[in-house]
Image 1 (spheres, one colour):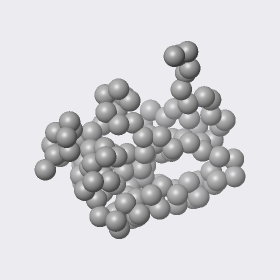
Image 2: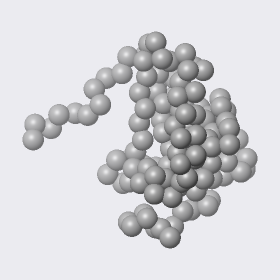
Image 3: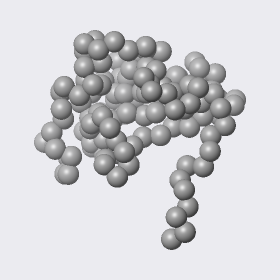
Length: 128
């Protein structure tokens, strides 16, 4: 059953194809719950995408449908990637875009992990 407002999961989205090894990726980590790989258009010196292996469109979809083991395994994978890339001490940013207003480009839940430089402000203050 689709999550309200999201529709059905597209099994041919680029991340689903990466999971099936139909499209190559520069993987830095994988386990039974997640795959992490370099972004093809990096926005920081270190820009890694971490995706769950299951067919989840967004964070809401992931948290509604994934098992407790999948959720814990995914977030532990994000932490493990940060540790393996030695990002803990200098710091890093985790970002996930959900939906059109946030700029989600691929309809498969994923987390961006940015590091290797100081990060600027998260949002521009629009004076509201």
